[in-house]
Amino acid sequence: MIRKIVIASDSFKGSLTSQEVAEAAAEGVRRVLPECEATGVVIGDGGEGTAEAMATGDGWTRKIVTVHDPLGRCIEACYFMSEDGKALMEMASASGLTLLKAEERNPLLTSTYGTGEMMLDAIRNGCRSITIGIGGSATNDGGTGMLEALGFRFMDRNGRQINGLCGARLSEIASICRDDVARCIMDTEITVACDVDSPFCGPDGATHVFASQKGADSNAIRILEEGMKSLCDLIRETVGTDLADMAGAGAAGGLGGAFTSFLNARLTKGTDAVLDAIGFDGKLMDADIVITGEGRIDAQTGKGKTVSGILERARRHGIPVIAIAGIVDMSEEEARERGFASVLAIGPRPQNESDLENAMLPEVAKRRISDTVAKALESLSPSSCRESL
Image 1: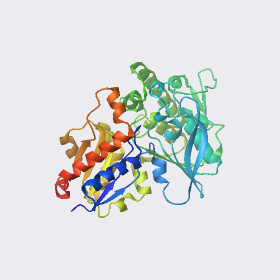
Image 2: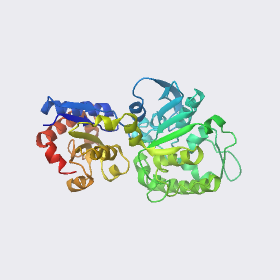
Image 3: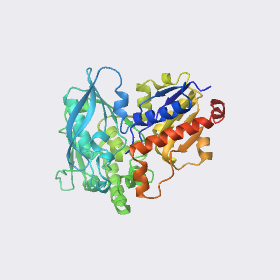
Image 4: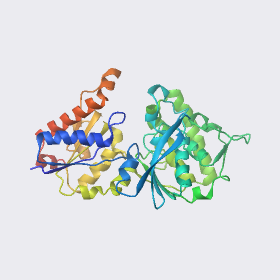
C-alpha cells in the first residue's frame, strides 16, 4: 500500500513555480489515493525559487532593492536577509532570462550588473555571508557586469576604463583593476549554488552549451566564445586561476568563474544546498514514492539539475522516483538506466509555437500534471517501482 508520496519538483520555467507543480501533482495523488499523505516540498537548483526555498522558518526578512535588469533597465529584485548578517539570493531575480521577452534575449548585450548591485545592497545592510543561486541567467558576460557593480574596473589596451560590460565587449578587456573594491566586499563569505558543471569556455563551456538558449545565433556564439577565451587567459594571468577546465566556472555564462576567481567564493551544487537547508532527507522518511520534475528532461538533466539531485537522494533511501516534464527527450530505456521508475511527459510534444504557448498556460500545465500523476499511480505500485533500483 502506498501511504506517503513526497513531491519535490523544480519549477516549470515560464509556467509554474515549484509550489504550483507540487500542488497540481498532489491533486493527482488524492484523486487516485485519497488516504495517501502527499507531502509537497518547494525546491530549486540555484535558479528561480532557490532563495525562497532556502529561506524557510523564522528569522528571514524579504528585502526589495532597485537594480538594473540584464539590459540595463531599472527593476525591483528581492533577496532574504537574516538578523545575524546572512543573505540568500538568486541572480535570476536581477539578471534572469525570464526578465526578458523572447525577442529581447541576446547574450551579446546582457549583463550581470544587477546581480552585483543586489549583492552590494546586502553587504551595505551588514550581511557578511551570502548564498546566491546562479541558475536561469540571461547572460554570457563572464561575470564582468557583477564585478563592475562591486567596484572592479576593466581597462582596454589603451588603458581606458570600459563601462557597460556585456558579452560583446569581453575581447576588449586587457587588464583588471581591484584597487577600488571595498574591503567589506572581499571579506564577505560567498557560497554559490549552481546547477551545472560546465567549465568557463571550450566545447563544453558556458557559450557552446547554453548561449543559444539565451538568444545567441552562430555568429554571436563565435564572438562570445572568443571573448570568454580571452577573459579566461586574462584571469589566469591576473589572479592565477585557470577556469578552462573548472567544473561550474561556466555557470550563468561564466558568473561562477568570476565568483571563484575574484571573490574567493565556494561553488556548491544548487540542489544539494537547498536539500540540505530544508532537511530533505528527513522528509523522505517512510516515503513510498518520490515525484519530481522540471520543464524539460533530457541529456542535461544528469548534469546537476534538480531532478538528478532528487533522484540521487531518493535512491540512497531505496525510494523509487517518478519524473514528469513538459518535454521528455529521454528514452524509457535510458530513464531506467539512470535509475528512474518512470519519466513521463505531461502532454503531447508541441509541434509549433502555438502549441508551446498553450502548453505553458498555468491552468493547462496544472491539469496535465494532475492527470499524468493520477494515471501513473493507477499503473504503478511500490514493488514494481523498486525493480528499477
